[in-house]
Every structure is written in C-alpha cells, then in structure tokens.
Length: 589
Image 1 (cartoon, one colour):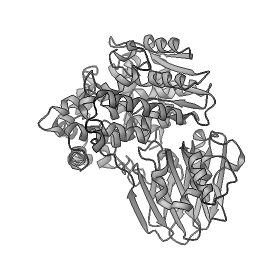
Image 2: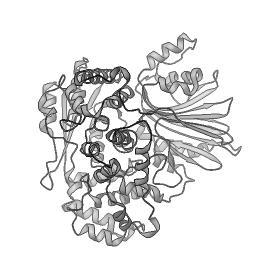
Image 3: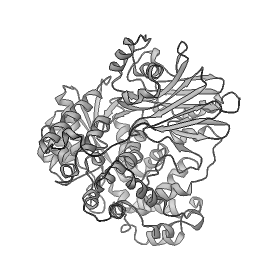
Image 4: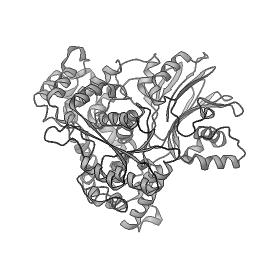
C-alpha cells in the first residue's frame, strides 16, 4: 500500500521532476517507510512506500527492469502474487525480489493488458514502456485504490490523491458545475471520471489507459459485474447459495492474510465486521486485535454500539480496544480528516474512520474491514422499495437522492445551476444491459459507483492518512461476482443480506445477526446541536466562506430548523453544504 505519482510530457520537453516531487511528498502519510523517484526523458515517476509484502529494498519503487525496458509505480496489494510468480517462472522469468511489485512488472511484459483479469487484489499502477515510449495505467475492478489524473495539451499527470495532484501546480481551482450537481443530489457521490475540480479526473474502476509521448490515448473498461445465475446455478436454493457465500468469504479472508503479521479488524459490532473476526479466528489467526469507536449521544440517539462489539471481542478472545470520542474532539479533528479526503464526503463515518485509524495504526499495519457487504448483498432499506416499484428509477431516486431537482435549483446560485445531471446519470445506468431485475439495476449502480466513491474511498482516505493498509474481503472480485449471481429473493428477506446472514450463522452468534442494523454513529453531526451547530453556522455564514455557491434564502431556511432538515438517508442537508466549504478550505481552494 503506497502513494504513486507521475508525469508524461507530450511536447518533447523533459518531465517536470520538481512537480512530481511536490506531489509525491504530499503523499508521505500513505507511504511513511520510504520514497523514490525516476526520470527518463518525457517521463517522471514518484513513489511513497508502506512496507508490507516484501520489506527488502529490492522491492522498492519506482521499480526499473532495464532488461525488459519497463519501469513502474504501484499502489495496492496483489494477493495471488505467489501463484502468478510460479506461472511466470515457468515461462522463464527470473526474479530479484520477493514481493508483488515485480510480479506485476513481469506479468505486464508477459501478457500486457490481458494480465488484469488474472489479478486478485486492489491496485492502481503505472508502467512505462521505454522502447514504445508508452505509459499504461490501470485500476482494480471495484476501485479500492484511487488514481487521479490531470491532462493538458502538454502533459498528463497522475497521483493517488486529488490534493497531492493539486500540489504539483498547473491546475485551475474552478469547481465543475456538473460534479456539484452530483454532490448535492447523489449523496455526495461524484461518479468517475469527474471530480469536483474542473480539469481533474479519476480513472474509472476496472479501466485501463494507454497513452504515448505524443498524447495518443486509448482507454478501455476491462471488467463488468454481470447479474443473474449461471446455467448450473438456476436451481440453487438458499442452502446452496449460503454455502457458496461462506466458502467465498473464507477464501477472501484467508488470502488477505498474506504478509500480514499484526492483524486488526475494524469491529463495529455488526454482521459484516463480526463475521470477519470469526473467520479470522477460524483460520487460526492468533493475537487478533479488534477496534471499536463510540461518540457522545445526541438527539436521543446512542453514539456507540459497544454492547455488540464487546460481545464479539469476548466470544473470540480478541485484544479489544475501545475509543470514545467527545464533541470537542470531533470539532477539533474534523479539519484534519477533511484534509485527508481526496474529495468531500458527507458520511458521518469519515471522522469515525479517521480517528479509529489513528488508534489502529499504533498497533498494526494491516486491518480488515467490512465495506461492501450492504451494496453486494442488498443490506440497505431502499432495495425492497425498488424491487416492488413500477418505476424502479423513481423509487431509487426517492429513497437515495438528497434533493429533488426543484430543491437543488433553489439551493445553488444561478451561475451553478445545471439540468438534472445526477438523475440523468442514474437513469442511463439503469438502462444499461447486464442487469434485468429492477433491484439488480440498483445493486449494480451501488456496487460499481456509489460503493467506490463513498464507503471504499472513505476507508482508503482515512486509513492511509495514518499509513494503515485496509483490506476489504467483501470486495474480493470472486465474491462480488458470486453475489451478483444470487437472485434478489435470497438477499432481500430478514431486513436484507439474508443469504449472507445465514452464512454468518455458521460462524458468529445470532445475537449479532438478528440485531437492528447499525453503523458507525456520530449523532452530533446528524442532529447538529450545541457547539457543533455553531461551528456549522460559521462555515456557512461567515463572509470569508462565501464562494457564491449557495442561495442565502436556502441557508436561512435550513438554519431555521437545523435538526429537522434531513435527507431521505437521514443525513443533515446543512452538514452536507458545510462539509463542502470545509473541504475547500482545507485544500486551499
């Protein structure tokens, strides 16, 4: 797990190594153990390293193989690299290191872009072909590892985070009105390739790009999530699907234990993280550490779920750590959490993950986390609504969108007003082939778009801010493909995730499985009381915060009833707007 950066020039000028150095140094928290640079004509590469897979210097980056004419930078982890290494050795390749980076480099030489379906892991990487003067960049199937791009007529730059890319200079600071539309409507999700900053893109998940020193570019999507059972699975009942899910989870958890000595789990006390603890214990992992976080109660809502996380910690005899956070520390640490965000995120989980990662990093370098289960196995409340609706898009929009188009138009000042871009995006996504049932269309959207730019990005940004590698077994591509093949009638019952819960019953106590659905609660940011409300008012009303984005009449309306202005997902509309200002402040925009 690391941070990567680079520049490729199209104008026959040498790459701007100083800019790449600025970008790379900004990535230091992602890779605190080492750094390196490589420059060759139109290309410059930078890397920050977190040592996990191979601690030796031979696995340092940028990695250069002069014999093959390849150099690369890589962020992520390839879990099946030993098997790929054996396959490459059988083809005659020799290795000078023991990690996954060199396996990627030689796999590209052997198979080119066709290597991507062979990879099981999370990754974003760039490989320079010296003789062809061509750069190949790629991102993993479910976008676990990020990659941001800035293209002009003179050059391409890339980096693991948007703020780092901005540190290189030569990028405007104008917001993209279409991305702002997505942010305010689609629960702060801005789908790739857009970002909030005009002129900065992100490579979409499961995509690769090949671009040469003349600026000629080719881009392809290399993986799709197809819904519906295979022919041999059509007759499967609940037991068959349950057993397949349990086996898939066992394999996903086990393979993510490679090169992980000190093991941790982010334990919320819900089904997903509790199942990870049980499976790790089942796999024989000793000295397992678990970490839970709790916040101050607000608005009559409890701020922790320690009763459930304690139950799991005691049942599996983990080394358990509880972190309790007061309101003052939330306000104090939120700016730092927003500095760590590549893009603004409104989920209250962000501060929880940021502070929890700070604690976890004191004890281990690798942690497993349960993101993805709700999107893959239908754990959210809107899936039954979509499943039974005559108009699937309308049902999804009513349940998920933060505002309708009329309210959005009243929210922004006229110069930022656009058509219903977020609505059009979702409508077009629902119309794509590959998912027939209405609920499958919603699951596909959430798994390949929302999941990437909300829960997955949140975990990457917040853990990497502390040099902590998070591994997410539910996002194993084999498990994702399996979940897509399971008919919705096996997912929707029992409050959602039915087949996953039945698999979990083989591993963890039923008290955790049959509890009400929970999450990392931060009531103070949802109900906006006391000092938190005053701070949010300052973020929105202070003249120095006025960027001409929001309609003052809408701000007055929201502030007149701050506890009552919640989105369909029960998030604060005020907090969403204040969060954007806070992120722009912390990024110097």
